[in-house]
Image 1 (cartoon, rainbow, N blue to C red):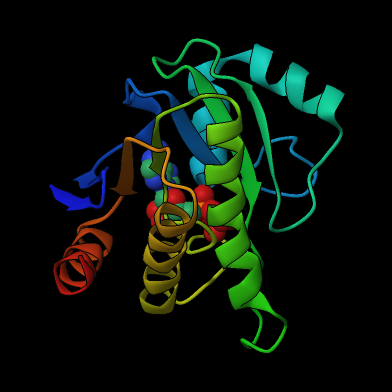
Image 2: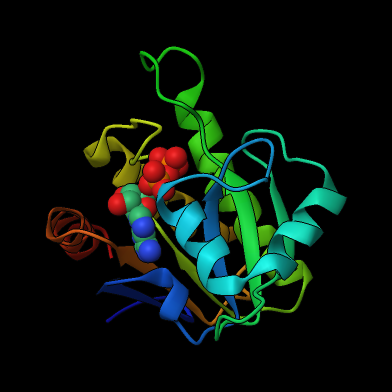
Length: 175
Ligand code: ADP
């Protein structure tokens, strides 16, 4: 457990769909119509209501975020954000990934959600190198707290031991 200013920052290993928290973040794609990885897990666990709302929203540009119900999951809301597909690091991937985290936090605060959990966005099928991606994730959260505060707890959810160890090292160094 870490603390930065008034915000608790936590790291856990496990399945984000099981968390009883205000908002879980989905690493979605531009269509918002579901996919594999964490996206598939969220739609499966939450049920059809999420997909129905996503269809009504009609998609989401890379780096932005949209909000829906969490359906049958224990969290209150799902914030769907779209990280970049990693190509060569020269297609503004860093900025898009940073914005995905930052805009998810903005949307949480706008909806009066105080606790939020993030998966490691873009590091699965989208191929973002995990080391860089974890630094960007932590930086975006720290910058958001510096600029806005207003969030009680941020949880980084690692799905693998490798991700857990990476975040553990980085959080110890930076916070
Ligand atoms: P992207 O398309 O943005 O790369 P993925 O879903 O393929 O998204 O992967 C993003 C990260 O989410 C990966 O680190 C993957 O291991 C992780 N992940 C997959 N399922 C879950 C889950 N149920 N809970 C938390 N993280 C998950």
